[in-house]
Amino acid sequence: SRTDLGGAPGFFFPLSGLDSRTVTAGAAGAGGFSVGETVEPTLGALKARSIVLAGGAQVFRNLTADLRLPTATSSATATWAAEGEAIASADLALNSLNLTPHRLGGSMTYSSQLLATSGTDLETFLRAEFASVLAVGLDQAALVGSGVDGQPLGIANNSNVDTSVTHGGTVTWADVLNLEQAVDLADADVESCRYLLSPETVRSWKAVERSAGSGFIVDYGRCNGHAVSSS
Image (cartoon, rainbow, N blue to C red; front, side, top):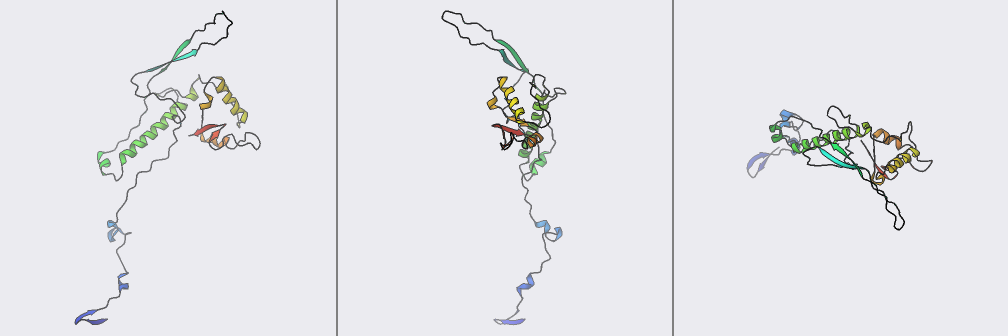
């Protein structure tokens, strides 16, 4: 409607007339090109967890040659003797454990332009990805390495590993106790040991009771007081 605004001609325009828009974020040519984007840090792929180093494996760093570890195969013994009686003598026997280098690596090609124009810290992400992949490869070699084609010999394939305690079918609490006893009788530090199991084995042991009503073999991430890791 027209009116007189202090002597100047004019008209009223309802604000509701401004509510209709044809410029939207959803259409590229109608406003979408002006919508900004936020690029978050890259999400890595799911991978098996690394458990060997977390389990206490000893690491020798900054080596530049083969490594020889002298080991004692027998030690002195302590004996009681009466007054004036000679103490029996026992000789120390030594052997050596020889370690040689094995190469583990990965390769990925990317351009310097990608690093320069990436909206995230892509180089840090790639470094973390490689570290994770190498850790998984290290686990596989340490546990089930074949000993051929450049792989180290893993625990499962080492003929010197004591396999005197085995079980078939569903594990029992007696199987677990026999296993720990065998480790203890071999003079290993059983108190610092932990279980490294497959996810399938953990699932199975979580469903088996030690005895009726006494709890399960694997309970709350532990087995008979020892930590349990799976991957």
